[in-house]
Every structure is written in C-alpha cells, then in structure tokens.
Length: 458
Image 1: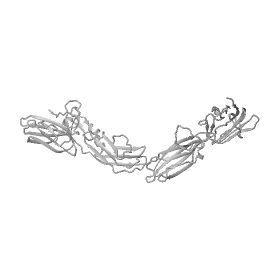
Image 2: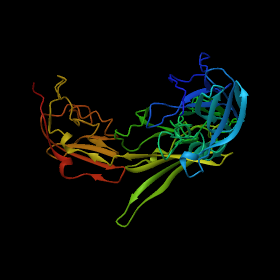
Image 3: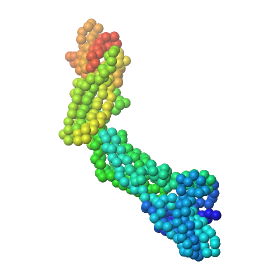
Image 4: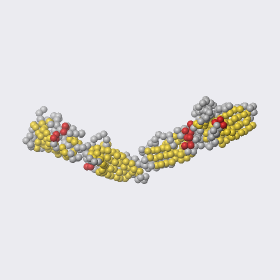
C-alpha cells in the first residue's frame, strides 16, 4: 500500500508543515511541487534542490523505532511493477536520512515495532543548470547571440526533470518541467536605443538593422522552479552601419523636404543630407533611368563622397536634373569594420508641358482688377519644366505690338500696352507662344497660336 504526501500548490512552497509526523521530507530543499498523475487524484511530491544532490528523510507516524527500506526508480527495467530497486536498508531507528541523492524517483517503506507499515514515494529534481557562456556572431547584417547551458539545453528539455506516471500501468515518462524550463527567457541590452525582437529563446538575432551602438546583453531565465539564471556579455562593439538620408528640393529659394507624392519640374535643385548611423564615410550617386526599345538601364550622372566628419551634405548640379526618372543612392560606410549600407530614393522630374487650356482668348485691361491681363489662367501644374519661353502679339496688320522672353512662371501677362508704353486699341490681335522644354520638346504650333480679343469697355 502506497501512502502519498498531499500538498495544495499555490505557487512554490519552501517548507512542509512541521505538524506532519509520519512523512517523507526533503531537508533544505528549495521548492516543492506535485506530480500530475493522470488516473488518480493522489499525487506525489516533487522535491527540487538547487544544486547537484538532494537529501530525503523519512519517519513513521508513531515516532517509534522502525525498519526503513529505500528504493530508487529504474526506468530501464522492462516490467514497470519492478522498477523500484532496493538501494539501502536501515533498522532500529526513529528516522532515516539519505544524503547526496541524484535526481530520480524514490520510495521508502517504513515498518515500526508494532509491524505497522507506511510507504512514501517522491521524485527528486536537482536543478544544477548554469548559464555557461554567450556565443557571439557579429556581422554587418545581424548580431546573433546564443546562450549555452550546462548541461546542454537539449538534455534539459528532453532528459532532465523527468518523472513517471505511476497511476498508469505502463508508467509513461513526463518531462513537463524540462520542456518548460526556458519558457520564461528574456534579453536586455544596456543601450536602450537598441530594439530587441521579442523572443523567449536562448538564441537572439538582432537584424534590420543590426545594432548600431555598443552594448552589453543580458539573458535572464526564470525557470519553472522559481530559480533565476542570468548572464551578461562583455561590451560588444557595433560594427554595422545604417544609411539614412534627408532629401530636400529647392522651392523658389527655400529648401523643403522631398515628398514622394509631390510633382517637381526641371531644373530640380536638390540638397542631400546624410543622417547615417555608425558611419565615418558617405557616398552619393545620382543615376538616370534610360529607356530604349531594347533595354532599360541606369547610368551615373553625378557622384560625391566625403568623410562624415568633414560634411554631411551635398548638392547635385541642378543642370543635370532635367525631366526624367532618377535614383538617388546614399551609401554609409564603417571603414573599421568594412560594413556598408545603402538607401535608394526614386525621384521623377516632370516632362515639359504647356497646357493650351490655360491660354485665354479675351481680356479687358480697363483697370477694374478683373481680367486685366492676358496671361495663363494657371501655372502651378499647367506650365512645367520649360527652358525657354516667348510670347509675341501682333496687330491684324501684322505689326508686332508686344513681346516677352523669359520664364513663364515669372510672366505677369500682357497689360494691353504696346512695347512703347501706349495703350493698344480695342480689337483682335494674334498671339504666338513659343517654348522649349528641358527635355527638348518644342511648343510652337497649333493651340499655341491664336486670336485674342482686347476689350476696354466696362
């Protein structure tokens, strides 16, 4: 007949109550758990020692002198009913204690002088696991840290902290505690700027980006027995670099941040600023995308390089930024480690365009501030990337009345005065607009010529 010790587990209990007389105790144990036998409500104790060995002490409930027979579970015996093997016997004492016990299952049969027999069974775990080292693989693309344990983690998960379900005839193995040993694992970096991925593994991989700052790394394991294991690396150098850039465009003399959703026209002024991390050298490349019937390829039209300690900005020649498709490549280099990172920004410069719909055919320069000029109705989106521009206005007899050469964006329009400063008469005039874009497209015929009506009446 097997008598079991019953415990209600509300967390971890460091002590068994002293009021129990007949008992199997584990002096100096660190934690007491219960088995999870499947076919019975009666469970045996699991005594956990933080070390290499454990101690068990047994006594009879009468307190009388007794004979003690100690058994150890041997899972290699094929017949489950015979797996408890006698390992020690002692008689004529009121209590028996075994020291330096290895991990495993134990049973003691206690028969006192009145021939009353009590049987106690327990399992003993020796939690002597240590974090032995943290292996480091420091690369440009990633930092990988792997904590090693003694004994190895595989053995802990599958071979340690095992008991057998004595409520079943086959007594199957249960390794619940070993499998959960590393389930509460966490990592920390001493530099809070380093973002660590969430993981509860012994392996930590930091990538996209790899660490950009020096740091130590600490692994902490709180195992199922309430024991904490922790280990910290020496300071690990950051060898990776991260290319970060800020691109600004010239907006009528003011630098504004480049916006992928905005449209830009030639000639496009660019300001390139490096904000790269853990870098000492920076490089810039501007490439244009060329499309032919046979292929699409990129070619470098501008480049720049410098030490980051000298300057962190560059200004491509705006004469190069004619209508087309461009790639701005920024490279950051850590010369000591040889690590390189890059970032690519695609930029489109609008093709040349003059929308004829914005050319009016009538105006009234009478000073009422309404339609006083012959000019484009809109320029922001309708007039784009124009290199040269001219407007000539002729009378019906073919005499040149007004002319303008310059930037269409700056053109305020014709106010109805001749080139000599006199008011042109009411009537019909003929206009010719000629322009050429930075992409060599010409605007000269069709909708860019036509009749214009000048009215002075109110």
